[in-house]
Image (cartoon, rainbow, N blue to C red; front, side):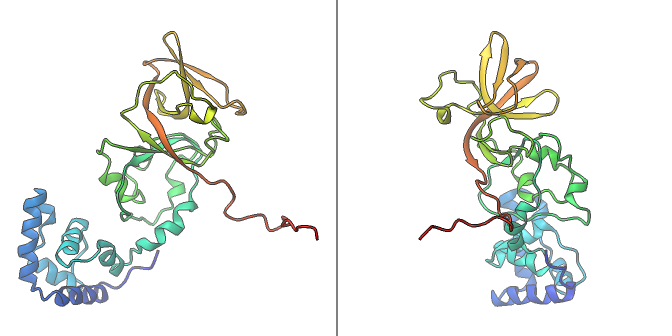
Length: 274
């Protein structure tokens, strides 16, 4: 991430954005009131004196007010955040810095990239990387939690899960470190198996010990069976249902690496024979 810009310099650039729109600070206040009425949330109100203080480097940023300014100034909110040192463009490059070993949900569906709220402490020092967990619970209360996970925590349409780096249940069909898309509306186990193992329904399961699993599922009487792939070292797990397990939903999509990002420098590349 970029170092924080000075408040005075950021304020000058923000003032330039306002002036390019031929807006007075009173105009900004007036337009923000419309946003408050639309969202029914007074946090989006932008007083004219706050705009003045912000432009003069005397005010601390507020995300809701930045949201309002991005609407009023007709610019991406990321442009405004970048003025104050939060470079959203770095996020894609940094996503691979943390690989968590246990399977968990990673929050709800998102429609666009949202900002993160960083802190000075490293994420690895705060998160239990060894345990499968829901990502939006796992990151709860942490400054580094991606803002979109907080913002979309109540959306019901789609969930995203993460398969931990130590979870080999469906390896190699779903490899450790994969992200999966989950449909929470498909929470009933379908017993019919497709023509191949690739067509067999996969489910994301919440266990009562605050752990999660991503596996094939079957029933045996009143017990839910978590079935691994044939080559997996993980045994079949038998759980009381619904006392000890709950079906979060069916996995409908997978995103995973199929090769290392950094190949071994000692590896000899293939050379075709003449």
